[in-house]
Image (cartoon, rainbow, N blue to C red; front, top):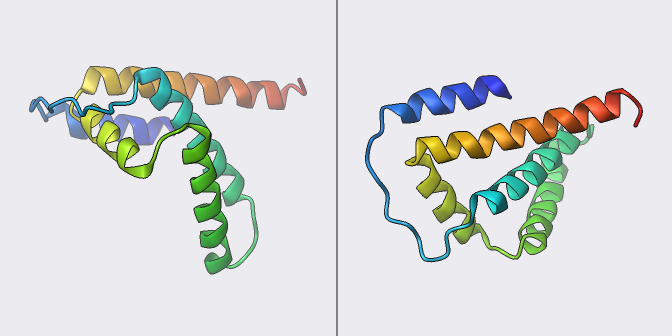
Amino acid sequence: MKKYFLILLIALACSSESEDKPLNLMTKEQMVAFLIDSHLIEGKLQTIKINKDSLKLIFQNLEKELYQKHHIDSEQFMQSYHFYLHEVDELSEIYEAVIDSLSLREKMLNSGQ
């Protein structure tokens, strides 16, 4: 996961354009919470051994529940994500928090807590 994060940061480091803030911008904390849950869903789905069509349907249902849980829609997430893609420092903070949280959860699971 850190590999993807670093690739993303390197690709975006060259972008110096400043993006206008969307009116319904998710806070960094909201983005962190959403991305953590999103990565957890993706991790669970990777362990399921079923055909791709069924997996896609399961993902669509879980994605819908994810948006409902966080009281947002896909448009708000995409606008917020696009904004943060142009704010490299803020995006870095978001993904550092996501990685830290997921790493902590992994350590707790591995230690049996």
